[in-house]
Image 1: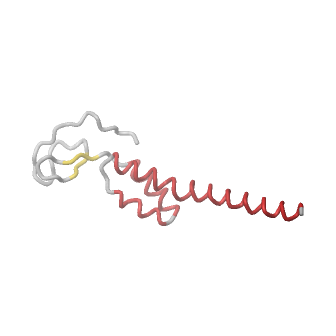
Image 2 (image 1 turned 45 degrees about the vertical axis):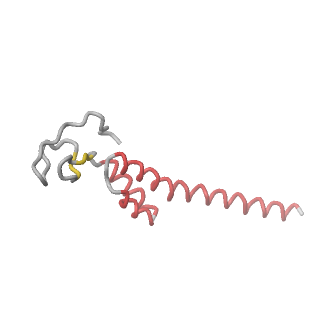
Image 3 (image 1 turned 90 degrees about the vertical axis):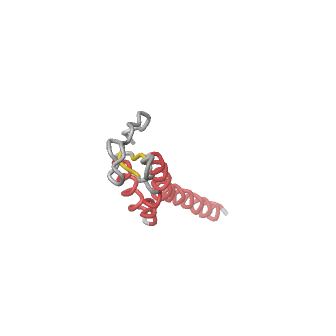
Length: 103
């Protein structure tokens, strides 16, 4: 009986370790990347790279390094927060004070 209990314990511990690896390696970068994309006004479709665990981390890092964007009030196009004129409609864009640069 002790060998059977040890085998069951080994299987349970293995499943717990697998769950932790899946969470940290796969689900965590997707969750973090979606949060960064939403905060910086980028498409959450970037996180489709998360189909592969390494792709999720790469997309998260790429989004974290991007400059935040704001939406042009005239044409609705997204432009980087440091632009003064919209490149699409050439309308002046008012500076936004609440956008955080670091991500």
